[in-house]
Length: 208
Image 1 (tube, one colour):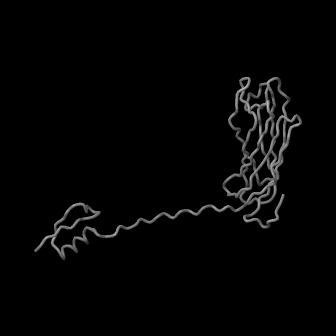
Image 2 (tube, one colour; image 1 turned 60 degrees about the horizontal axis):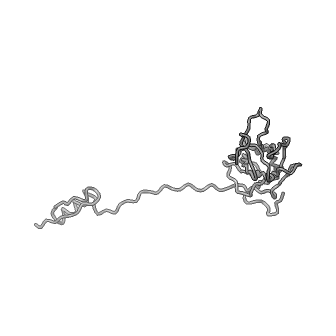
């Protein structure tokens, strides 16, 4: 009888095994499993992406300038799809007159007033979350200051079932100074109308 070598794959298939031909070969296949096609592991099913259920619209950005003209505050909220578990974010932009600055965070018992930006919604279904000021631009008289332009995010928490109109009212308090003097504390209030509709909107003619 003639003996033949058969390679053994996968299950120690790198070894060389000498077995009789014919019947022995069939037994060898059954025992070792060599020659079988590898089974592909089942791929995990990818979770479906979240689909926004509402769309937020609003009018053009609203801006207010101080009586002195040193600071202009503008509020904007770009149209965006809404997911129930994610806040929407408005932006308040302060434009500071050239040659002036406003103070970032300073001691409350000091002679200067820190920049403060607080949002409030006109309905119970929307809540303005605390704002976080960006890093200051420079240091003046040992205190952090902002110059030129400052952008501050105002996050809004919206209840999952809320739809309709509301006004985001943002109060901006600051003190403007130049190299010679500081002016009294000022407060600007910027009111931004917002509309939240089902997705897609019931009517293309919805407007503020």
